[in-house]
Length: 181
Image 1 (spheres, one colour):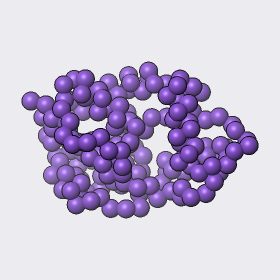
Image 2 (cartoon, one colour):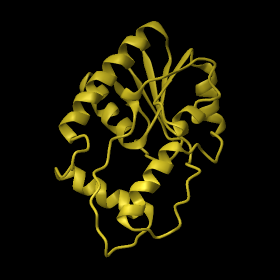
Image 3 (cartoon, one colour):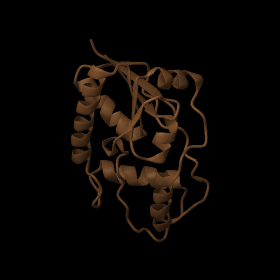
């Protein structure tokens, strides 16, 4: 069996302005509503076109990234890991830095009503169950998902003795293919 995890294309959202934590919360909402602003590399397009089924999250950047596929099925179980939000009034930084800061807080256990690491691992297990069931019926299976959640899924597949082909890049359009006999 073969499963490919692809990270979505580059978001059309603006990353250049320095913003407050409150503005970042609104920025994340915008980011989740935006699509992508680039095309998949030829290699990724070929993977999408050859797959009998491509799974995605329900977010536009994931759905738009999968548009080359003939059959797409979206499921919120594949959404990105949630971030905690805190109101920090004295700081204005770029969205990428807010993301790193909040992801760090999340990793050390400060989830502030967002999904916890334990809950995210549990969701990754359920999502891996879905991937394995779909891969039995339609192979090769492709998921167009999100950077951090794809990592959690990859770790779960490896625990289940799936083998990774290639590196673990987290760039947009990165493709990680797992196989199991």
